[in-house]
Length: 407
Image (cartoon, rainbow, N blue to C red; front, side, top):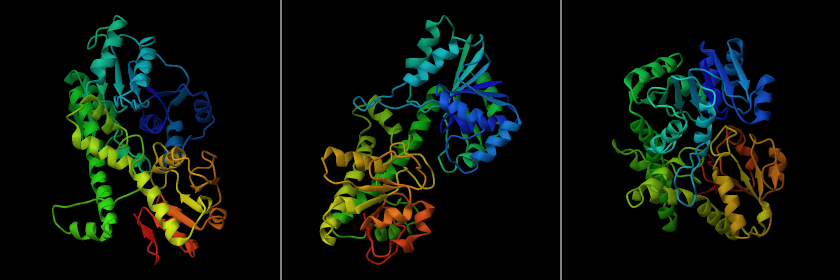
């Protein structure tokens, strides 16, 4: 039996995947409402294939609880934010989970941390806690880092098919955890040491952040000199060794927008390109605001309330708003004491989370003169004809209507 700690965007699909493949699972979360919802047979967020996986897991053996259980295998999948001042990881959720495990676990238990952590986090924060409880790491408690590698919108497929990394102190424990993940993972599972596993996951997301930043900086350069960044990227990508990404309104989610900061915080003065990339991507919502302002002046739109932002999530066709560029843009407006209310709509966000939010696409369009496409949901791709007569700023390059403005 395994106890999965944390039933959010990573923990829940992971727990369900294990259960659906014959592993007895208890899923634990401190959020009582979340646990109660799951026990009523309802999933807690939208994700393609998740509902089918949920009912498949229920047919096997999975239970949901507020309590930690005594077992020989734990998987921690809790958030790992960063301190916005020091840029260092805030390992508080992980360490509290470890402490709760140590209160109930038997000797010889394996504690697997799936949460993304900075290199050295286990050495600095986790091992000392275990030792303070009088346990010996590697004898009484075995530590493993198996960083998640999935993305909202494609979680179920990627859980099955993506390769995995297992970082362990001993090859024996690494192979044991590899065997567990092999119950569902069809990708290659690589066993290595813990610190390498920690660094590898952070490097993967940092690589993506830097490449996105290059595209976004190109957009700014080309805008400053009236060049078409999309055409330039299209032509450049014909080179066999060039693959430039498309620019966008910013970077969101809990991986690419967070993990690179771990390296900036832990290696000041060394992570220079990484820091520059983070600043570029974090500055894109501000750049979008500037584009909105310039286009409003050009089109004679005098009131912010006549502008509508389409999309609140950080990527298309999911309900995940963590670190979303739209939320960053709205925060920037508040900082600038922007007058007037900007309207917002997202088909995946059914509860009110910001001022001026609409829940009906047609009503949203009726009340704006300018539409800013922040997210390329399928809904808007399939209804571009409804934007006829609107001023359009398309930050995702999905609309080809004549007169559309881009980054």
